[in-house]
Amino acid sequence: MKRVLIARVLPDAVYPALEGLDVVRRDKTTPLSHDEMCAALHDFDGVMCTLGDQFSAEVFADVPQPRCKILANFGVGYNHIDVAAAKAAGLSVTNTPGAVTDATADIAMTLMLMSARRAGEGERMVRAGAWEGWHPTQMLGLHLTGKTVGIVGMGRIGQAIARRCHFGFGMDVRYFGRSRKEVDFEASFHSDLREMASQVDVLVTSVPGSPETRHMIDAGILSAMQPHARLINIARGDVISQTALIDALERGVIGGAGLDVYEFEPEVPQALRDLDNVVLLPHMGTSTEEVRVDMGRMVVENLQAFLRGDPPPNPV
Image (cartoon, rainbow, N blue to C red; front, side, top):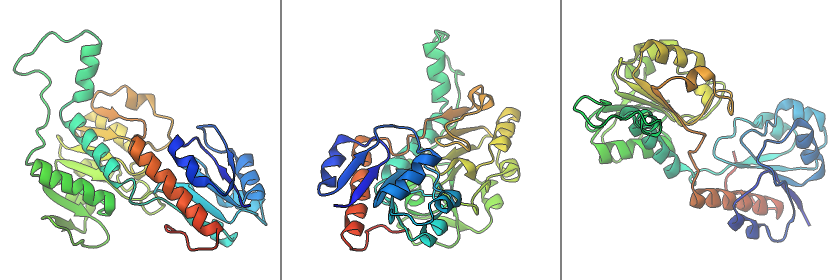
């Protein structure tokens, strides 16, 4: 019987799908330590890992002949795994695309609305007992309907966000990416990110985390944005230069930001937490019961298929 490690607590509905495997459940919510990752590679045939489990080249170097042959990632993003090193060590890597698309797009819209309408700031005012009642110039924000949105990365999630903006809010959609996309709504392709950033009211990042996308939103891009514009990040934290963003928010270079991810999460700098013009969420992009169950079942499908000798449905 194949032995697998489930490295984090999963929704209860996922576990029955693991029938037929010798399953070890690590009932913790924290990432695997270096020693735990090495033990996982040495002692198991397959491992379910997820964000925070840093399977680096150094980890694979410390286990030169791993028993483990598959890392089944819980999540669509896998920049915490050195895939080249994993494959060189004889491991396959899988992920869970598709299951996360709509939930992540919904969080992008949540952040857009919260930032534009100053919802976080308003809630803090009410909770603090500082609200003195309605008046015509109270908490004036940005009206999203009819505005222009720029999507950085027009993959599954980027298109889902764009579709919500276009059909739900009548927004003019622009996008930046490696190539033009065929979509079922009007959208303008930009090959120059800085140029697009200068023309939009909301800039949304929706690209995979990788060395190529690290700090693609830097001080130059932020300085090109309009003073009222909002920046939304539901991708990976290091897609944005956190230092440059804090500076832009403090100096009023942009109107605000909405973040679900952070460059060094779970650390969130005090400078960000002190700002009223940024909405901060704790990486909630896929945080619904249905979606997390779907993701877990996709992980198990990848494990079960691979361990019985079939191609896994979602290789990377």
